[in-house]
Every structure is written in C-alpha cells, then in structure tokens.
Image (cartoon, rainbow, N blue to C red):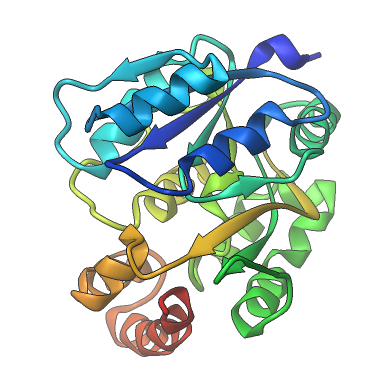
Length: 264
C-alpha cells in the first residue's frame, strides 16, 4: 500500500511565470501533504524566491535540450515510487493526493493515475465546454476497473487523441520505461508516453473528479506550438500509429479543430 511518503510533486518551472506561486501553494495546501520539489533549466531570482518562500528544494537541469529533457530530469530527481510532474501554470484541488492514493491502492498493478480536469481562463474556473465534454466521453469507459486494465480500451481511447490531462497524471516509476518522454518531440510528449505505456500490462487508474485546473493563456507553450503548426504535425505522427494514413489524416483535421480551444 502506498502512503504520502511515497509520492512527490515535481514542479517544472520555466523562466518567470506569474502563476508559479499559485501552483506551489495548491500543492502545499493538499489535504494529505506529500513531497514537493521544483526543477528548472532556467534558474532565476523569481523561481528561487518561490522555492525559498515555500521551503521547497530547487534542482537545476544543467543540460536542458527542450521540454522532454526538462520533464525527464524532473521525473528522475524524484526518489519516491509515485511522481506527478506539475505544470507551473496549473493548480491542484486540495483532495488530489487523497484521491491519488485511494485510486492507486485500489489497483493491483497500477501504471498511472490521472483525473478529470477543468480549465482556467482569465482566472475563471471552467468545468464545462465542448472540448472537456468530448474528452470526458472518451475517458468514460475507464470508469470500469476491468477496462482500466484493458490494452484494447486504452488504445481505442488514445487512437482518437490525447484525452488524458498531463498534469493530472501520477506515474508509478517502477512499472514504467526510462526515459519516459521522447526528446524528439515538442508537444505530444505525453500522448507518445501514454501510447507506449498503454501496451503494458497494468492499470490506467482514472478518477472522474475534477482534481486539476489547466491554465489556458497566450504565453503557454501549448498555445505557441499550436500557432506554429508543430502540434498538427505531431498529432498526425501519433494518429498514424493507430490508423491507416488516409484515415489518420481525416481524424487529424477534426482533432485540429478541437485543439483551437487550447489557445486564446
């Protein structure tokens, strides 16, 4: 059985996000406190100040080669068997760790835990919109423990896009390959990782509760990658793993329309 000593949040901090403090505050305020670290490849006074304010250890990645490098570094510095890579702009509901531990401990062979999520737009918390409804519909089959352990159902869900909210994911390190994130990708690092993990024996433990709020804003990496078309290229790369190329291309066009809601 896992407990609070077995889990670590690692916050990936980049440059001078005005939302970093709010993210760390949400982790400090968990009903069941666990370990918290901050990792960065862009050390500066702002990040150092947040680390001092919350008495959180700060680790510097000296050899960053991009987002995947930063995520792999963050994943690697956690010494606990359960790791959540927290995104600096997002916030976590105070019951996240409680739900995480309950979910993970309910499965005999968990691979990852993840939850439903909402969005933060202009500081407003949104739990209902078109893209959220679609993702919830895709993930609904994983409400069944049997389907959480089914390679077929996991791959069927992932074949239509990445409905799994990346910052909501907690990874069981001993059950997963290393390195987890593909450094050849810019934007679909998470979809690629879950696709590879979906082939393994074990459970994708899903909570339908909204436990994370993902911030949508103009300076986010996701928004920038959508605008320079990197997202569309990598979406097609992923869809080709599941579908013949002509079908993948059609799904990619439809998927791109949905991705427009991830930018302001």
